[in-house]
Image (cartoon, rainbow, N blue to C red; front, top):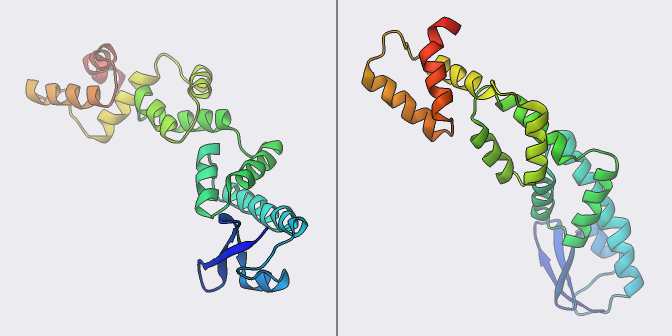
Length: 204
């Protein structure tokens, strides 16, 4: 193995390329400690020692820190680790590490997300947001089964009307039509909108 290039990332961090391929990022002190220099040989045993004892350990700690900072999906965690310049194999191992402790669970994340959003967003909006966050459709469907009831959509519609301060008792036909259009674009079904609008004042 040969160190083919060392490229600065910051004043203290450097990308190390081995046999023309990006291998890992090391701090300036680590380059010195392991005697890593461009155009010089790197023993295979040392290469794997650095990967397993330095880079992987760092990635695991970074993953734990990111999850401690806020709840994340597996996809979001992978993206953050990739931005930290960890290679795919290291990311895979770091993700498996935190998953083994139950620190990352897309199904649990989806249940929590739906529970927070169900009173203010349509099912379609919530579903799309979870897909965008990288949650598998199977996990989303199961989470909806656990947390969503048939009145969820109508409750969300009532909450939106309340927040928009629409006075349905005084609204004219044009304002009602505009409200229908707004709610329909947000993914609510016509029957749910009609039910809420028709009986809004009775349930307010």
